[in-house]
Image (cartoon, rainbow, N blue to C red):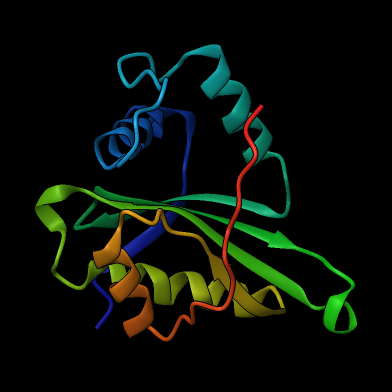
Length: 152
């Protein structure tokens, strides 16, 4: 049963999205949830919104925003030019967690990847998020790689 509806985010959603990401973060960031229309957020939003291989989405329940997810569609040469879907920034408001909505969001995201011709979907999850790791494994994701980040 599908309970959520999905729509592309607008600039008006930035307060919701930035606030949700900061609230749900397991690491300290320099984010500014009280300044969702900061020029840096607006520039990032515009870059996402104008890129045909990006989608920043708001999930709604009964017309109210309850989650967000970002999808990136990545072309590649590996595996005969297989496209990959990258699932990022998966967040649900605290009051709606553990109700199956996260699984519904991921299934929707996988469907979007299939529709775009992706042969695989991938995601990363902070090593501190052990509950999230179990969640993704229950949905069929495999821990196949070790991730690395290099910050500037």
